[in-house]
Image (cartoon, rainbow, N blue to C red; front, side):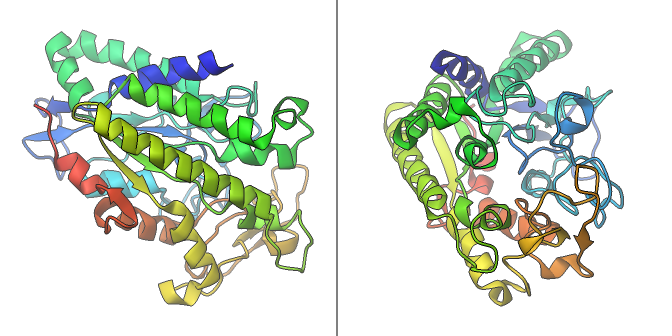
Length: 367
């Protein structure tokens, strides 16, 4: 199992830096040259790959997803944009298309390989998602296309100067709470965390030098998790949040060690845990009215997976003003919340996004 995670991460980070000539490309913000941007991970970053795979039951290709910014469902688990959409905008790039979207061949800007439900472990939602290993395979296929179109030297620049962004791990820890999977439940928590971190570490060692990482959020306190605790008590599942804290601490140590050992390695780790938790506990501080109940769904905290009425539960509620909410559904932030966090990732202080922010990573060149 560990070997499967190893192979994906090898390929994933080997190409983490990319600088491509703008010849023959056009974009309203285009400069003489641009840094490409590649996104991997789970539903927090999935720009719509879930629309194109029939095996999954984790989709957001129906109303009211996408109701605000896009005006139609795009496969994003939000009413509008996701964090990578805002980062692309700040980097003067177009929105990265889902890799599986037909006709998505303008890959010199980058691509989005993230898929809802994916984890760092292949066993997580096995057979129902495009896991991290498969995302890596897709990336390798894209790399071949770049070499064919641009030649080896230009493609090499792509692989040397790109910025990579990844959000992974939440599903590895959360899935046992929502399933009777004997595979995941058979692993002690410490061993499970060791496996997740181990897979990510091996990938990073083998690959790119400009890496953005989203830490895990307060997993036990998201609406979907609180709803399975004791509805009405406002209690979190503390063991899940503790797992997230331990994961984040371990990953931070790994990244620090790699920075000291790998020549040219620079990373940006965003404190998603603290940033999201503060908005949940103090919504008015950030311009929200509701931090713990979702905008769309049913049951306690509107946390049940019924938004859009496409699953087994057809009835659901939808808030009247989504901009007042931190969460759009039981596990995913709204467009407004994503924008606030993307701004911090892009140019925030180093105690929230460190040791570098993404703006610094995009500006830094190895060539």
